[in-house]
Length: 269
Ligand code: KIV
Image (cartoon, rainbow, N blue to C red; front, side, top):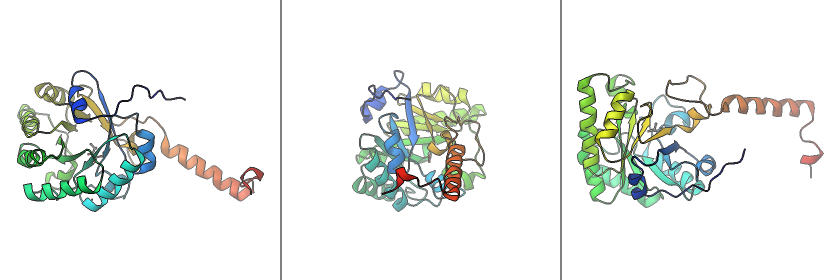
């Protein structure tokens, strides 16, 4: 299958903002150079999500991801995807107040080529987002179901089920927009609510588990390529049966090692 890449244009903050109501944005996570290279010049943005703590490091949630880890993986992604617009997740506990947030986001900018950082939180976090944007750090917001709140909220809960919650989410989105964010991830929100939020703000919303009416979509690469086998969240679509393909290939390799057909003359010096 050949992939036509000639409609790819390297993203910038202004192009991302202009995409609102014009072009749906495609975002995918990556944690290493190899996959980032494959995704680059196809996806509009690459997110080095703190989901790497789960899918890469095998932990139960994202909370123990560290800034050093995020910087390490962001450098790997930037090395592999030289033309990509790369966003780094600020991990849990690294932006609890304005000064700490600025110090840590500055480290991300100083030590990597990330174009922006992502921060979870609504109205409560708007002053932190504002402090970063006023200090020349580009920020993507993240509202709705926020994985870094999993322990304090007692689980992952879909949002936007009541009128009151929808109103709160709209306030959150507006506050983050006013604070200077260039885009907002809306995660785990009822589709009608996500549609309303997207209509109420002027910056692009990027949905995950938020229906089709956001301004773009983001998926975790290992989910959408079918490598994560434990369960499939409702919002994930498998575009590849990665786990099956990998296991089948490794089984074939093992049997060829055992029966002596690998290496053959072709693979010999
Ligand atoms: O960490 C991550 O990969 C994310 C996406 C799910 C939006 O925040």
